[in-house]
Length: 375
Image (cartoon, rainbow, N blue to C red; front, top):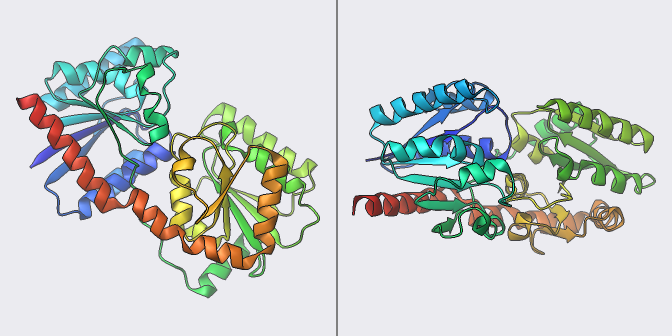
């Protein structure tokens, strides 16, 4: 049996958190003899969902860099967990846990793996801090992020592992789907566009609203924006989006649904997915969820989504309101194109982010690290 400890912050909820929950759920169903446990600094939705999946969650305490004593306390807590646990490897997810806790893992004599969820520029103080402790292996979530690894760990060994996706939601009965759509103001004849992400400006909410503003005269479309503000700046950003929607005359056609735990279910009730990033996305699990749901995907040709979306399942456009509006309008009026592109999605998602292949690959990577540490 191999025991692995995943180290993370846990205070917010987005792509990394969704990935960790999927890992917990799918590994529990897997016949593998690898045991995954989790060490988090903060209680919240992530910790709750991991425990609901019957996974061990170790609480390290709320570590804040601006309060050094909280970091020391969390480090001591992690050291105690590592000493008692007999772990074969520890994985730090993202630069913040790597910076704070990589040295603790190294001091405990446990092989250290860094899961790279973001592009690394090497200029941020947190990345420079993380660079002090080199891991035995880096697992990059896309080829796009892997290309930036040289900025922080120029000599590190790495593998690209597209993250496993959440389990696909069941296909709802027609009546159930219609009721859900009606709850959010959409009829059976409407084409529902869905955008589901953190409230971060680079996720393209403003660009999408601007593009839809050019489609005001086109009938039969609705927009569901899924995602709640988790930080003060996100509250201000969300307020700005609501104001923009009103100014564009879209108030009756755009619904802000807030933070939701049933995104795959909402995807199944929609007709088209659009998250037009204005900066490169490291990978983009939301796109995989959309493909699983059989939705055609429209996004910008930037970063990780270039590894996800191709002409068989969606449209890649420039980060420009005119280009985006044209692509969306074509799909809104062409039901056959939506059906054709959507039909290719589930197979594409399974090929890129299937749980079985991910878990098998992760096991292989970790056993290689463990064997190297023992030799």
